[in-house]
Image (cartoon, rainbow, N blue to C red; front, top):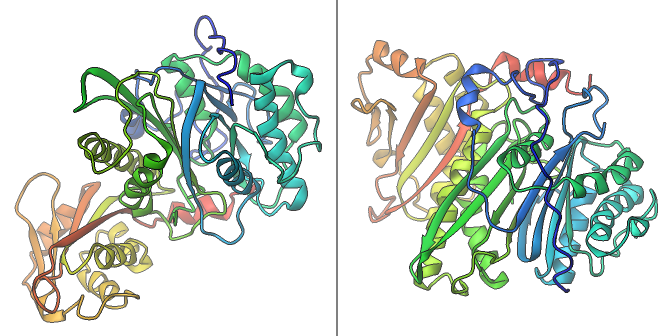
Length: 480
């Protein structure tokens, strides 16, 4: 589709967002982010050229105060190459269906915007839910195309018929409830007219997609590519999620934006490679949401040579950059895990294959017994070993008990605490183990010793948190 009109940038800055908390784990507003989490919220950013953002208040959440944003709009001044990965949950939410169809019918080309609401997942809502998601996309499309009169009224979205749409849709919140679609549709032109490229606007969008998050999750960075060393590119990303996190591409949403020129055929494998090592390698509670979506838009606004292959020097460089960036972004979800007191990396090394290593790491990360032991500061390595032993789907000879070792790796750089060495238990210094577990950050190292033939060199990591009493409290009254 054509380039369309340039977006109008909003003048000035967004007014400070001030409201009171309903509960300590509600969506954040200014000055209510927990002191320990404020270090994760950026005070400035370097955002990609041609992308604009905003978050506004609509009133999707029944308890949301007037100035708390719950509708985000992110748009590009020119058409983008785009791709996305979606939940594998069989009860896929309406926005997942609509966004998938938009990308399929557009072949990942000509995408202009992403619109996101929080407070209602629009999941398991039947045909009406599809109509609502479609209406949201077409309302944004109309803002690009002509006059406000083109914006569809509630119930007039065309269901799954999304020919020529250039907007992706995401929703997050309570499952099984319909959106207050009239409120949303009437607010979209306002969101469009207030789009801007300032840090405050990007941060307001990151706040608008939060549900039980205690802080908005937003990152940005600059980079260069080998073929265009004099060109500075930018990469920005935001995500949300604190519970129902065990993506299989938690309720997890994510968006990446870059002004580097990356072709659609390159963008797809690039995102898959990065996601397998980041968003598909985190777990809070082992639940895979109905709404998980991670989208990547590239508008090429910074110029330079197009990246058309991951095997090229530019392709190798951008793969490393995007993978590291998505790992950092996804780890913010674990930092904000519902009720979490620990941030844990489990690293499985000397595995016959990456797939085996990742399956073992995933099993450990979602083990309730491992997670509760960590919360209790109990160095119960037997639970870790047990999880390794019952991991399903491993290749023959991947795990040999007599070759397997388990250690705690302190994050302060002190000596590794060996718990099990080649199948033999160590005499553990319980006082040192307790001291290591007092710290928020921890690495668990599982060395498979190369597997049965001893030649395995692959490794994989997973990031997860512990299970606490507060996790039960949060999820026990989620709808109240």
